[in-house]
Length: 220
Image (tube, rainbow, N blue to C red; front, side, top):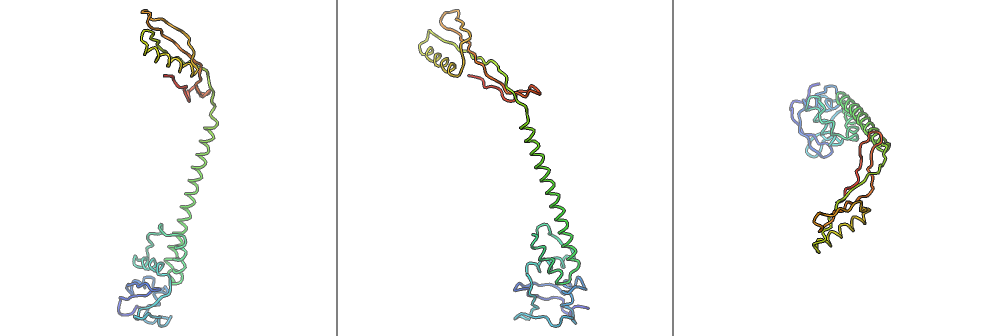
């Protein structure tokens, strides 16, 4: 059935006013919403508000999505930003208004959302498994420690009182850190001695490759 003569109208949907065209509302000609505004509506006279605007008691936010669908000529845009709850309400109202095209669009969008969620779940599972595998491999790394000799060299300047005290403190510190005097070499001048000090320490290495994992710290 053809729409009423004046193509423009305002609709009150639970207190929210929508301005549209009859031709927009009649995009799906066999829908209930098209028949509501037909010249000879099978649903009789629509209720109106105080300003004689047709009144529809439905969720106005969902109705805004329905109007967007109708204005776009049956294209459902922006579905990725809608919550599951909103999609459920939209499908319910699409059925209420007899918009078969919108019902199918919502069903297709929900099916695509489920596929995307399944893919995301598979990806997360694969990442979790890979991370756990890396952790297991790291824990299974065979490590060993081997002894190495570490050397330090000190000069004891006996001709300079201030330097002598400083050198003695350095040698004492090295001794406290586990070094021992391996060699004492006098300088040709007789005014100083070279001390070669050593201690046994370890390098940590992978026994399968021989690669050093953690080297023993060098002494100053």
